[in-house]
Amino acid sequence: YLVRALPLKDIEGKIVKWYGTNTDVHHQKELEQQKDNFLGIASHELKTPVTSLKAYAQVMEAMFKRSGDLKNADLLGKMNKQVDRLTSLIKDLLDVTKINAGRLQFNNAGFDFNEMVEEVIEDVQRTSSKHIIVKKLNFNKEIFGDRERICQVVTNLLTNAVKYSPDANEVIIYTEDHNTTVQVCVQDFGIGISKEKTDHVFEQFYRVSGNKEHTFPGLGLGLYISSEIVKRLNGRIWVNSVVNKGSTFCFSIPVRQEIPF
Ligand code: ADP
Image 1 (cartoon, rainbow, N blue to C red):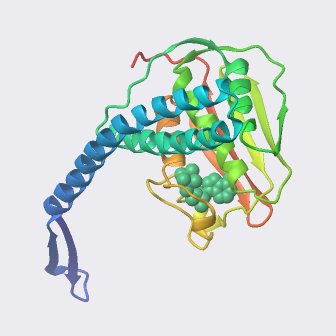
Image 2 (cartoon, rainbow, N blue to C red):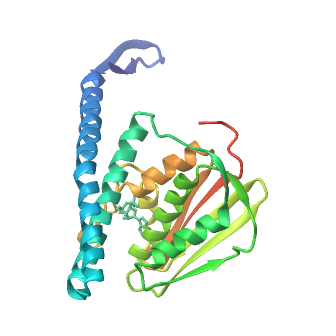
């Protein structure tokens, strides 16, 4: 039970009576738990058929290519892309259930930070005609942490920058070496976010309303997952944004993860 009490005082300030309310938070917690369980089971069950769908579509695309049937190969290519989107949505849902259950795993190892950032850029560039510009990437930094999770954060910020700046020609990614930490900023010249809403964008399932949500698909999980990853890495994530001018999302993490997860 959550108990809230307010004192009723007389003119001398002496408490003469307490007003109290008891709220049953147990029921709320149970509902929350049920939601998390459902999310976990549903995303796990969705993963299996989507994984085989992907395998079949890949085989078929290769077959059509080999036989010179480019029209069907192109169709299968499109299908593959949609399956990839589905896979990434399911992955996000699975990550959220892991975070909520405190079961998000980290596998730390040494890796080349620049190479990882370049890999993300190449990946995002493949599906976007926008010019992705890299600045200050000229440092060699071997960092110790979970490459895949850090990659996930950079990917989320970069895909959002591309997605939420439909009329802009470029996106800039800055990387900075601060000796004991590395910092990555992604700047876009897109729709921006108003001040009061920037406080909420890192919350679970939060999406800015009035954004014509349907033109920008998503579940509102990427930034939540990113901020949870950065938090676990003892780093910081933040945003500066101006409506109709654009946003800059940054994060900074220690170059060495001391605590083995
Ligand atoms: P999604 O993009 O799937 O909705 P995210 O968690 O990545 O989920 O982002 C949450 C919300 O924050 C988005 O719905 C969008 O309203 C806002 N947002 C995120 N990145 C940007 C950006 N670069 N520019 C403008 N708004 C953004």
